[in-house]
Image (cartoon, rainbow, N blue to C red):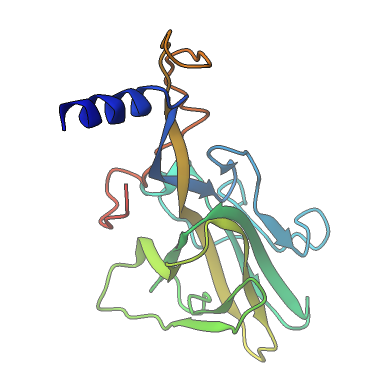
Length: 228
């Protein structure tokens, strides 16, 4: 029995390395993009064409709704008002590799002036699958502007490449969409443990390979608990 235990132990020591996996949360900012890959959201129509998409630099006479940058993720946001006579469709496309996705908007109940569009109406399409509709109707009993609002989430995905489209189209009325950030969960091989052993046929070095891990959470006021 003792001999068998010794042989088993030596067999384990001769393994070249042991890889441990971890679930890490990464962010996709509306402006800065993916916290690891740098890949940025794709806005349609392109901001340089019809100029539908606006940010905090938009002049007051053009953008009445003014979110507080201190309450946004990364001190930025990207917003647009859909008008069917201006474009038949507007969208935001996010690409990520992971097993879950959480999308956050800034929602408006009152922009400080009557007649300003504050209704949010859009749909989410993940990997060309069925559309999931989202609707926010202004509620004056709540805060004028609400931050870190989870508007779409999907878990249990294969840890592969995915595409999420946020689409507004086919509406006869105006609607406001303000994208702040998204969080996705990625399964990452994060530690390789190897050891030199003169009794083994090969030799490897001991190392900790973190390989560009970014364990990003939302802003400190984020109230959601994600896998970590």
